[in-house]
Length: 104
Length: 169
Image (tube, rainbow over all chains, first blue to last red; front, side, top):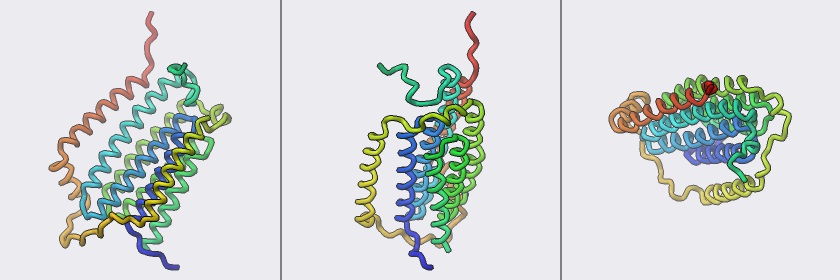
């Protein structure tokens, strides 16, 4: 069994597929926790892209940028879960379409 | 060997991501997301990004996912797992997905026309972590400080939002 050598394009395809799966989860699930997990998937797809180009150009800046992306993802998860706990305490639900105070 | 490893890690990543999006129980979703993140860590290792590999496992699998699991177990989700799982806006989701899918398919059909060949590897390459540290602390020192400020704000905000409010007398 022989494979073609792995190029940067392979990583880009994988990253695009992961981004698509994350987008599906973000748009279609009702549970806010799983929507947050889908955001993590999307950010990780971006990281795969950054590291692939970092290797393609033999330049380390892409990896530094991936570190910043991870930082933002961690901050987003912490704040998002804090909001989620406050929301569950006040409304007793974590389903996104039952949180409609601002809708009319 | 590299190709086989790439396909193994890619299958782990995509299967974990798919299970994350489709499973009913949030704990199962979190555990599949851990699998997916480990596959991504393997992909980082394949691309000679050893520092990011360690960061991915320590921070994501060890930190963020444990936080997710804590929150899932803190709020009771047994009844939420029995309800309808998908929101009513799925036509919007399918339309957005089709658009992105068509875009990616046309891009792949064109075969990456704008991607020049990569330069030759450097003769004397220092270690991955040293190069990242040089870049992070010399070139990107100001964004690094901004990121630390962001983390401080996120910590304070998360603690403030998650704490119990005293009821006013």
